[in-house]
Length: 254
Image 1 (cartoon, helix red, strand yellow):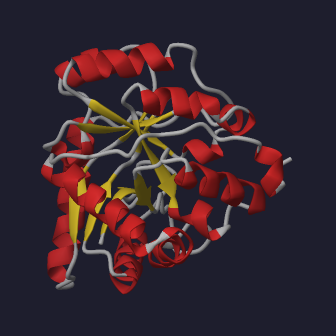
Image 2 (cartoon, helix red, strand yellow; image 1 turned 90 degrees about the horizontal axis):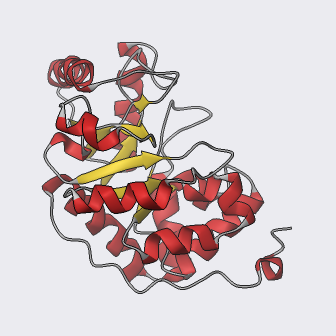
Image 3 (cartoon, rainbow, N blue to C red; image 1 turned 30 degrees about the horizontal axis):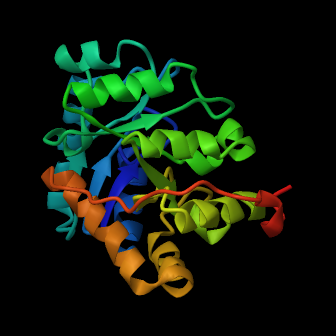
């Protein structure tokens, strides 16, 4: 199993604080069945984590993996808050794609709104050879109010990643129900942990994929797992045709 979104690098954002925290997270990830993690620290107004620092921190984690003989691999990545200079900063080698060798980029929106330039930014990224993956859309308050925003982005070629803890209900029933609707309408392409620790924000990947398999079919859970593999090898994703979410009130979202 591959986790493409995880805050496991120590001391650079709101995830693991120390190498000991990182080691604890690695051991829990292994128990979950995770064999590869793309480390994706925040790059936003609060946390300025650029490429050189991330590569350095990954080397530190690789060392503790080797010292403890752990059967897991950590690759460099980044969770980039959407901003106007994304493409320029990629060209200046300030930013990282997923696994540092692919065209896939994890893009985050502010939690309380969708930037007005989001569609244009995604178009420009795709025109420059990057594939944006919108992370945790189910937790964005504007998308919660109007899921058609997500449909419009996906319909124009963006991909999206839902959070394992959203599937399992750890972010609340309302977010869980919206996540199910996102899945039902082919608006999600990946599940990842977005793990920050092993207590309040743990992995939940094994549980989430079981739920997806039980609720939507084994083929879909395998599709998500294969898509994560394609990210780290810079392979191909074959999205199903998305559809709009209709009548949210049926599932009691509001």
